[in-house]
Amino acid sequence: MLPGGKNMQQLMKQAQKMQAEIMKQQEELANTVFSASSGGGMVTVEMNGQFEVVSLKIDPQVVDPEDVEMLEDLITAAVQEVLNKVNEASSSVMSKVTGGINIPGLG
Image (cartoon, rainbow, N blue to C red; front, side):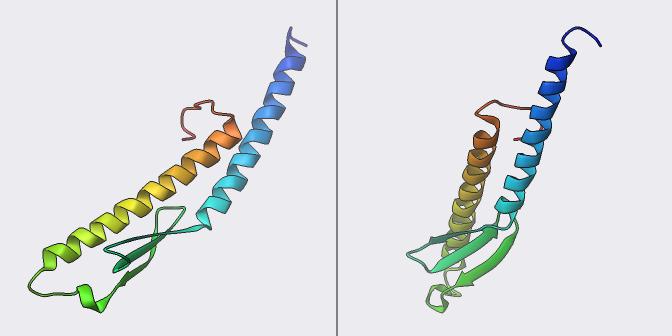
């Protein structure tokens, strides 16, 4: 056995355990639905942890053919907010699993 072989085996076991935990956490995150709204709830967007929009609701009162730009802004704001929530949750999950260590390719 090479010098330090036992330490290498222990390190590999820890890495495999971390990888399994990351996969578990990513699966849970993928199944979580995040929600954000804008315009006092006039536009609501739901997105899962895989950054897929699963729902977009628009209150009919905000649909004004004379002011399409306002509706576009409300949709953009709601989508950006829900993206931020998913990003924060993803970063938090990875930080918990890795103990705050930045591992290239995992974040």
